[in-house]
Image 1 (tube, rainbow, N blue to C red):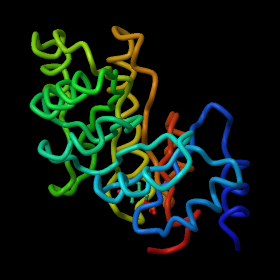
Image 2: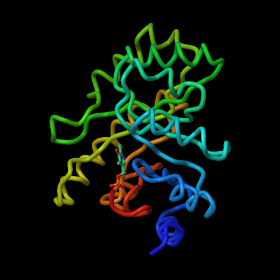
Image 3: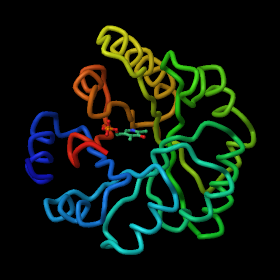
Image 4: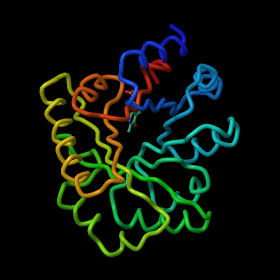
Length: 216
Ligand SMILES: *Cc1c(COP(=O)(O)O)cnc(C)c1O
């Protein structure tokens, strides 16, 4: 099936309030352009260098989302164009994003990544750390970033109950924090293998790669 057909099948399978991020990491520009020509305008990449190269070569009405783990020293390479950074998991990283956003005279939107999976390897904050960041003086003084929601990744497993449980725990944290913060509207969870479950659990933004562009 073509990229265009995949996109249309996926998009018709979920409600309109759910935003699709087409995860195009490792894929050539020709593949991204096929999605672009089918109307897709939001692309997700997990390497800053690769995203910057694609940004340079592609139409400028694309919104580029950084979905991977971000190293502080690389923020400067995306600060002038990135539209949303999903994987923010420290105050130090937020400080650097704020600094680079200021240099570029921009307001950069971020999601804080919450650790919901069992695996030790997945990045992210727990509820206490999230609360610490949001209530910290340092954060409140940052004028060039905005936290507009949360992001999480479930454990890589076939156990649907476990995935569901992890998504529900993220949704519950999201609900607790959005009660006090009207800027937080995005809940980024769900990938090719689990986006239906994620949407059932309240996801508003899914990051889908292989189901659109094929295996990497
Ligand atoms: C690669 C990646 C995805 C997309 O994964 P697929 O299984 O190809 O849909 C989603 N989120 C993150 C953070 C990723 O790194």
